[in-house]
Amino acid sequence: MSDSTPAQVTAAVDAAAGAARAFGHPDAVPMRIEALRAVADALDAAADELVPIAMAESHLPEGRLRGELTRTTYQLRLFADYLAEGSWAEVTIDSADPDWVLGAKPDLRRLLVPVGPVAVYGASNFPFAFSAAGGDTASALAAGCPVVLKAHPGHPQLSRRTGEIVSAALVSAGAPEGTFSVVEGLEAGKQLITEPAIKAGAFTGSIPAGRALYDAAAARPEPIPFYGELGSLNPVFVTERAVKARGAEIASGFIGSYTLGVGQFCTKPGLLFLPEGHGLLDDIVTAAEQVEAAPMLNERVASGYAGRLGDVSAVAGVQVLVPGSTGDAPKPALAATDVPTLLANQDALLAECFGPFSLVVTYADEDQLLAAARAFEGNLTATIHGEDDDAAELAELVYALQSRAGRLLWNGWPTGVAVTWAMQHGGPYPATTASVHTSVGPTAIRRFLRPISYQNMPDAALPKVLRRQGTPDVVRRVDGVLQVP
Image (cartoon, rainbow, N blue to C red):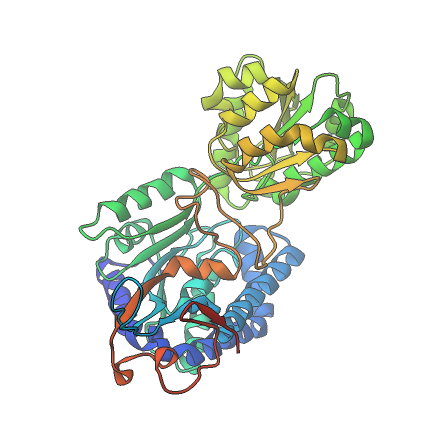
């Protein structure tokens, strides 16, 4: 398939706009529940077809991709369950009261409604979970928003076939034609975010591409929200006590985390802070040298990795510990420096290197550790490895990190993002363009909803969950009291 023409992009958006009323109506929630489950079932049934396509296009192994497809269908069903429970809509009713303490109060009834058609830009590193039918698509559809997907060029055939399966499953469950469609090409992606009927955008990828789309969304005559996940360093800070207690374990865990998936996870630990005299370099270097070469996602990613590796290695004061290799299937690389060098070269050293590379940074004391933590921009994660006796002494570090990350970890590794209710996958810029939201977990739906209040509206004009007659089987707050069926 060639790149989508401007007319094809407009047609896809117009079809999405045409589907929006029926698909997004508050009374259409039962249909959306069935539709999400139908999509999950259809993708599971097509696993033996889709996984080989993904393997060929992404170079990722079969086990990883099957697990990722399971994650994809799990989150579709999780959103369906969330819709059925009903609290996502924030149904709130304040009854009229002529004797209210602040004066006569009108009858007010409020809930969340979909914003309208959403442009979703698929990611390269998770061809199932963050691409065509991934979390952005699932949460937008759950919210009642038709989706126009801009396929990622790293897996075009997979995007097309997944799109066909998703679209057919939606229609089979009663969703209108146009609820989901796929467009392709760089120019199509640029056009898509400017189409007047598109009401929000969602993106996972590089800072330059994400920022360009974010700026385009903001520059429209009618600006729209753009939820971009752009880049993250995910620093790890290790205390002296932790080194003494379990240094070898930390070294092993670090190597496993930063080389996982050839370093192509958005949560890869890009820097490891260790106290001076830690004595772990031999273990770290030996473990890194033993990791086998593996293919990267595509030539463009491999080229970008080689360029960034060269930039970091050229900084005075950076020691290359493991040179690794570049090319389509690189071996992991590792370098070391200290906090003064890091702070003096922030532009070069505090920028994401997407691939199997990390930087070990030694610190002399707590002041240096805090200075390093405060130098970071926004991140998806920040990790502390410490002992229980460290906790009280780390208050300032925790405070510095909580303003710079969306998820703080204690004695763990950031690679791997659980699809759970409490997960926060987001963070201050440039990790994301909207730190108040998550792109993983049921509350990701909130990105594509907006509140509306109805004042003194007759029942016939209200969505069913807001009507005076009947008792809807959803969570509601009525006159300030939470009601759970």
